[in-house]
Length: 429
Image (cartoon, rainbow, N blue to C red; front, top):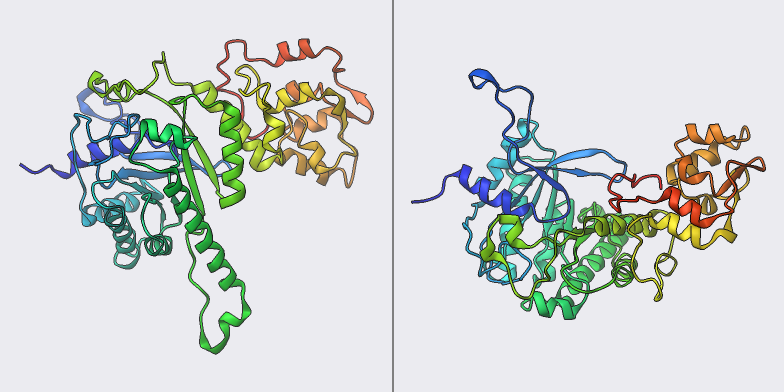
């Protein structure tokens, strides 16, 4: 007996939630007396993602199929897993996306798949879904497609014609770790796909900016995945330290112009599905996912992308792990107290970014406001600075908020004593 669409959605949205790119919601909502619903909720498969400017967007996040011939130890959908399997048809996915979009449930589609056949065959299904949405259904919303490692350059070019963003998951930090936990996968193949994307993107951008391309009645080159490419990295499944991860991240940004690296705290597949059969002797034993570590890596990632730090400033050989109790920007400041205090009424943009509690947005406001008047500590607070951290590292018109004369005391005041650190803001730190 075949599966109905509702069952497919349940299975394939559940299978997709392990991708770290966004957090999934699938509540049916609360029903009051007489079965009446109080409040609203999103249908299963709809998840929330956040843009760089902080806006929340809703995406339909599903797998085309959770059938997979690979047996990656960390994956709940691996070949040896005893789970329900399902696959959409292209038309089912097209209809589902359009229906959710019309009902204003979603603003876009996030589509990946298990590797149920040759990579080009799997990729062809994802591309055909996106192409059908664009050309036959008139769908103009956001589309994010996963690139299947091993797919050819021709397929990547085609995918970029219909999708806003493409991504290929690097999965683990080193080739050695891949060979241990995902022996069918190859770091060289994954990086090759990233490199192909980067090369195609540069080529098309050069064509679009070349005036000669418009001669003789030619139109501009088509857009190619204008939102760029991203990747995902699993944290805690293998023994690499944070310094190795940050160095890898920095290299990926520099070599392939990635828009984002997502970090996914490792959780045992058995914990995901409440199924002890999904455990694997190759996996480490842990009491729970390393969420604090994941959070600190995201903060360090922001230092690389928006605060103009290099990886060597964040971690060293002597201290290869991020501090669980203090954010990496504050940790750097406490190790470099001779760099402070910084006078906010004269420091340049790059220097302002080094002050804990002052983010890129606040630093720009400071520069703009200084054109017409000097800035006080109270004025800095109104601009968005977090003075709880910033007060130790700056002066305003020569006046200290608090002198940084006791690093141990400062650290104690700014530390998350429970090590959670999950409420610290990512945008201004």
